[in-house]
Image (cartoon, rainbow over all chains, first blue to last red):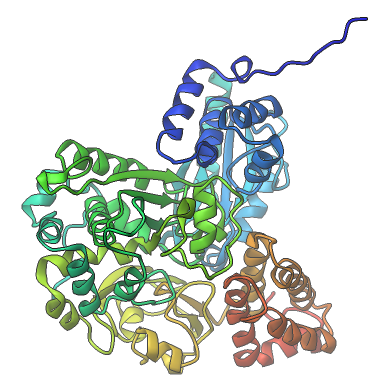
Length: 172
Length: 422
């Protein structure tokens, strides 16, 4: 009788550039698991999010258990464990933005994109997420779009940004 | 007036290494290398620098707990806490974007003062521009031989690494930060042992806030007496104060320690047209409300404490008369509930509970019993009952709002709606 043995190797799931970048991060620390957050960010940068095989691969590369790394991945607001759209929009919902009536912008975005926070628009274009204070309190309301901070938001400014993204999406 | 924190700050295009050196940059570090580490500690003690992250602990004293001398552990760490996530706080971002070399120099001097061989700059991931500019400053310092092995022939070696986090408020708590740096879930650790003795990877470690470290080069370059004289009242040095909310010109200013809150409000041009100030948080989301009558209070640790709050980060948040105080507290408590790490029960359960009650009251479905329950929760989550300061920090704006804006809370219950909604 043949027994099927399931083998798993991180090399099957991470590319060479990712492995090298993770190894470089490991060199900054006494212990390999310390590079966990950097490693997850490296993987996410290429792929948009961290899927199960990649999470397992990173865990193996760093000498951690899958569960341990999952506990870290899900601990942080900016590690995505589910697929995201082509663009990720984090709208700040903390106090200085609240005082600048960001709730109205949140309603506007939900209406325009036809999604709730945590969801991706039907065309796969934009994932809408909340964010805690982005440190833009003097230029509230603010958001982070694909990693870039955008300040002094208004409905008009949001509409312009969304139109530009939409055009970009159709062209690219 | 001297402004050592912002004298070399340029937000559009920060000074590169040569430009920074031409303005006196890295002279503080050179001076430190001429002294023994213990002497550097003494300079900072004499300067009476207190931590700018929120707690105000004397920096020199913090360093003083690190084991020194030949028998001390061979590997020690200096960590810069730049995980600025306190709502209403944006001072460290300004310093790091505008004066990256100042922070790098501050870290180098602090590392030397405790004989650390490795330093980490723990930066919040959302600050991408900070990361780019800090990375560049670190590379320039490495290439100039200011970092690495046997710096300037002094026999002292230091490696400095940038660690970019991925967004979680609790990482700003110093022992949670150490767990995060080790690649563990960022729960706070029990103290003692204190990080200065058993810290990162079990080695002696000092964690200092980014603004605190930016104060160090000036102290070494111009001396403790000069630094002491910068302060206007009890506390030494200058501070980056900020203000946000519905003021005319929100922003940041470097002022002498002890400048009254009113001066910051005046620099911001006062409240926007047609709005009146109801209350203000002196230093971020986790500080108690103060009232307009407290505006003359010097923005220094003891004076703000006597007024019933905390200086915290020095980032003032102004509440105007068109925004509901209950709504504001609900927003703050939702933040703390989301960011609780879940390690201890009062915080993990108490904050969502408080958030639910506040939501009920704010939407006009609250009862008198809810108010009593909120008061009980303030006690349930207070100091000594939780593992770290997160939940007590959340209680500060909540309990003070219930004291100062009791009538607003009561109206929500009596009228069955939020009186601020049109």
